[in-house]
Amino acid sequence: MGHPDGLEEWTEAKEVGAPGFAAERRRLITGLADSRSDIGTALDASEERYRYTVALSPLIPWIADAYGNMIDIDVRGLEYTGLTYEACMG
Image 1: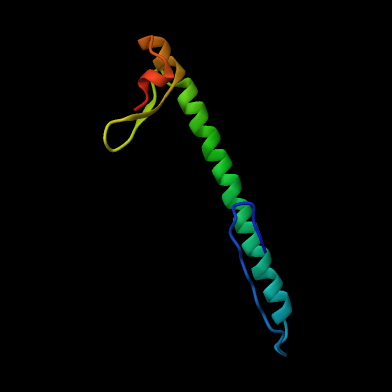
Image 2: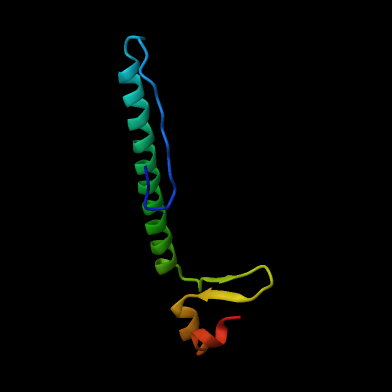
C-alpha cells in the first residue's frame, strides 16, 4: 500500500481456522490506518499552532544553523533591521 509520504507498507496474513481471526486482522489493519490518520491530524494541528505562535509573538523569530548562519528570519526582523532577506541569509 503506497502513501503520499512515499512510504510503503505491506501486510500479509493467512486465514486460519481460529474463530474471529479475520475480524481481528481487519481490526488491526484498520487501527494502523487510523494511527496514520491521527498522526497526520496531530502534525497539522502542531504546524498551525507554530504558525500562530510565530505570527503573534512580539519577538523577532529567526533560525540559524549550527555554524551561526541565518537560514530564516521573520518579515518583522527584516522591517526592523532594514535588511533584505538575501542580505540576512548565510
